[in-house]
Length: 324
Image (tube, rainbow, N blue to C red; front, side, top):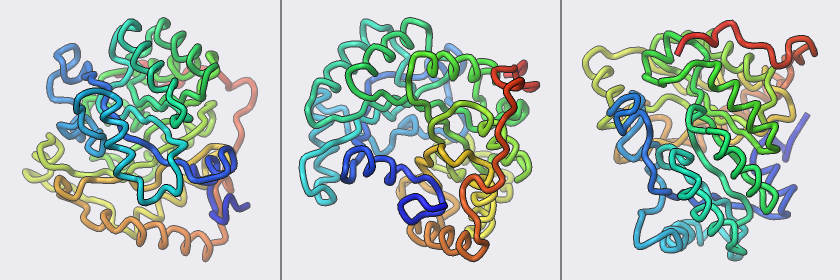
């Protein structure tokens, strides 16, 4: 099966099918922080997270949101034959970590712009109270609203090691509440976390394949300057993926995913100025070319090994849900 001449269901295919043209993301900073940084859960963030709160490509705060949007548009203007449509991607830190009185005017002002087609908010599952889900559901009736959840792994020991700060049951609860509100949900997974085997990474993807997710971001672990992960790596280097092994792991994960799940990311982007390792990840085009070539040689595709969940297993708690 091919999607836009690729052996996986790509985001570019989805967007072109929906809008009839390429659609680019504008990475924005909503001015929020994170419970892993403001002292609620911790003050240093997850061990892999940079000081930019994973929003290192976001436009600077500037004089306001409109200034941010214009700065972000200028960065992609050479790729766009026309002004929009765009996805307003609130990327930095936790973009539902604020009261509705703050979020409603912020998000509504963006959706009111004719050049914005989609609102995309990256957040944590433990920062989605009912009032915020209700707000997002209402906004979704105006224009599409996507919610990105940072899961990273299903394994409790790894979750503690990276200081994720919530149990798997919290993720499951938030996912189902978001889906009940009619929202599009994209889940982030990191491949290559310290202490995880490739079998464990596949277990995370297999678990997600049984849930009603709409999209997935598969990130290669990046070691960035200024993070606690960088201190760990410099003190006691742990093994990292080679490009070839990463592509092999990526293919096995894609084979497990349902064919209808949209693949939003396959490698991740580490800012050149911050990236310590793996440096081969900067050669993104080479990585994707190797992926496509290897999948063609193996005659494989997304969903080849997918096993649909039986009805009796739907909405049943995971055995791993009790530990943060």
